[in-house]
Length: 413
Image 1 (tube, helix red, strand yellow):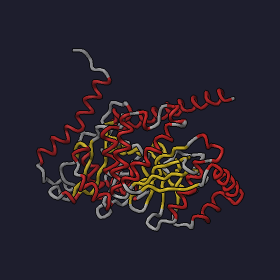
Image 2 (tube, rainbow, N blue to C red):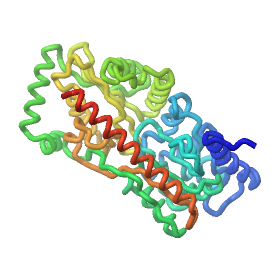
Image 3 (cartoon, rainbow, N blue to C red):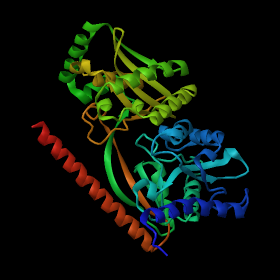
Image 4 (cartoon, rainbow, N blue to C red):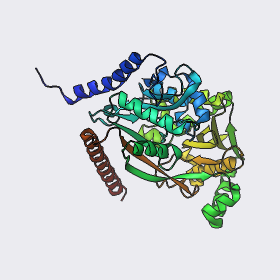
C-alpha cells in the first residue's frame, strides 16, 4: 500500500473532526444533555439558527462586531480562503433556540496553518478579532460547553487567534482550563490602539496630539477646503450604506491597496462579502460608513461596525491625490468626534496592526491582543507537537517579514 502524503492525512483530520462530533451528537439525540452544554455541539456555520445567534450577540459579555451573524455568515459565504467554517456551540437547552450560550466559528488546524494535527482554530472573520460571543448570564458553563464539544470533535487543542487577552471571555477560558488541570499558552501578543469614547472629544484630541499638531492639521483642513467645503457624512440606513460603500470601494481600489492587488473589489468573493455584510448590518443599525468630502469630491471613507457599546474601525480608503492634506488623519479626527459624542458608544477598537503609524498617535488607549493555544487533555504529547509546530511557523513568518522589510528598505534607499 502506498503511504499517504501530508495533504491526504490532513484531509482525514479535517473531515474527521467534524464528522466524529456529528456522529456523537446523533447518538445522544437532539435534546441530549452533556452536563456542560447541549447537543448539537458542532455544526456547519450555516446550520446555526440566526435568531439564536442574534439573541446571543445581544447577551454577549464581550462585544465583537466581526462575529455578528450578518458579518461572519457573509464572510463564510464568499470570502476567498474563509468559507466552509463550522461552529462550536454551547446550549442551555437544545430544544430552545433562544438558549444558545456560546458560539465559536472554527476550522481545522490544517486549513488554518497547514499543520496536519488534530486541533480546531477560530475561523478568521476578516476583521482582526476572534473573541467569541459568550452569554453574560452563563459564562463559565458556556465556555466549558465549547471546550467539551471541541474534545468530542476529536480535537486535542483549541487555538484562538487574535483574541482580547484580558477580557472576560479569555479569563473564563483560563479559569475553566485550570479547573481541569490545564493551562493556556499565549503564542504571541501585541498592544492594539483603542479609543475611550467617554472623553470630551476636543480634550481627548488635544491630550493625544498636542496643540501644535492640532494647529497643523487645522491648517491642512483649511487648505483642503480650497477644493470645496469640507463635510463629514455618516451613512446609517441600508440605502445610504449601500450607496456610500461604493464610494469607499472606489477610494480603496484607487490607492495603494489597488496597486498591490488587495482591494476588496479586486476579488469577486470579497466584493460580494462586503456588500452583503454591510447592507445586512445597516438594517440592524450596526454598520456605518463615514465619508469626508471636499466639495463634491470624496477624499476619505471608512467602514465602522457597532456591537453593543463598542465600535470597530474596519477599513479606510483615501484619494491619494489629496495626500498632502492627510485625508486619513482628517477622517479619523472626525470619527473620534463622532464616537465621543455618541452616548451609546463607550469605546472603539481600531482593529489596526500594532504600531500603526496613523491611528496610534490619535487613539492612545491600548489593549492586549494575542493567539492562545489551549490544550484539551492533560499530559497530551500531541499538544506538545502542535505547540512546537505553531512556534516554528511563527518564527518562520517573523523571519520572512524581516527579510521583506529589509528588501523594501534597500529599494527605497
